[in-house]
Length: 577
Image (cartoon, rainbow, N blue to C red; front, side):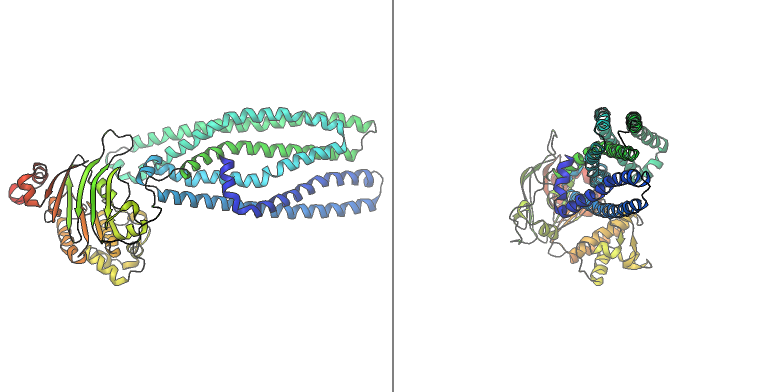
């Protein structure tokens, strides 16, 4: 999985890879020639007392060293550039993929896991890419080159050295087999820690209100302890592997010195040749260490690559049309024909057999008890989910056939829990209409009953907005979210209990100002407050995902028990009348 992922994302950087390979070969060749030159200096210069030969070979060594340094610097530069580019491309691909997901896919992976995959998992793959370009490319060249040069110096001593390689390979195999599952558990625990942190930070007021700081601290501590336990086992394997490798290397180094010293004493080998052989021995061991380091990082990167691939290979349940419709035959008309929706694996569908038509200029209210499917019904219109039965039409065209950008311009959706982006009030209001003028922003703020508090801010439209709009109250965030949608001037407005954080006076003022601003547009409102929707053109009553009544307030009060029960839970009989 890791190799496949890297191969796909390294194709645009093939020229850099060729340069890396050539520069690494230049670097390693320089390293391989230096011990041989040093041996010649000792045997031909120092032992023979030939100063000229020493100077001559010294200059050659200097040139080889400079060439190797240039190769090393160049290889590191291009390796870093290619590895960082791979990380950038992976993050961009993951971000684009997540943006294409419907709520179903996001819920399947979970927000904390998606964040971990885009950040930590990509970082693991990026690090392996860098190590591959620097260490993994160098290791075989250095190892094979070291063996060849060692054979050139002395064949029998090289045979002693080659006995060490199977022992080192056995250590690698044992460590690799044990580390892979541990790395998988590490990434899973990172997901859990991310989720707990997100919950505790987002819900800090709930935690404090119920005095559950100790409980949450203990929950975090348990997961943290599990992550520490897995990390400790990984660290133990790493700590054991390198000493074992060094023990094997040192034992065979002693053997090489023993047999080499006897050959020097017998006059069968020069002192310089023995020194060169020992240098090649260290190079071969260095190549083995590079390989060992890659063995340690590969399993975790393989797990990360698999997690990244899961996201990239997941297809959104909301598929863009092949030949999208880019022009609506009718503006503002919303129609639901026999619509049903159910979540995968659920025993019962959330919605079934919903028929509804909303014409331009109409205000349609949707009411029902908790869990009756009101929000799900609205989610189907901007295609946050696709209906599992029936058809949803906007402007006379099935939303599955509409161009996504046209659908987003046509339908404006104000959620019950508004979300503001970090930036300024102006940047948030222009989110759906980047070319909106300041006058248009102020007009929308006035309709949304937000102009007064924005004017009181020192920076006014340039006032900063923190992440999620945390520096504003719930009611202020809700009014700014409404103004943001009003600025875009869509043909269809969907209000999902969007007035819940407003006091009655602000709610009444906003509802009184809306009709003139949204004249000719289709409005669908989900609300819990009966006063918010009692004057709607039509009220649709949902119960357990089915329409059980449609009509005006007075018609439903007279003939629909479900609606009557909802109204009388909030108002007296006289107030309802």
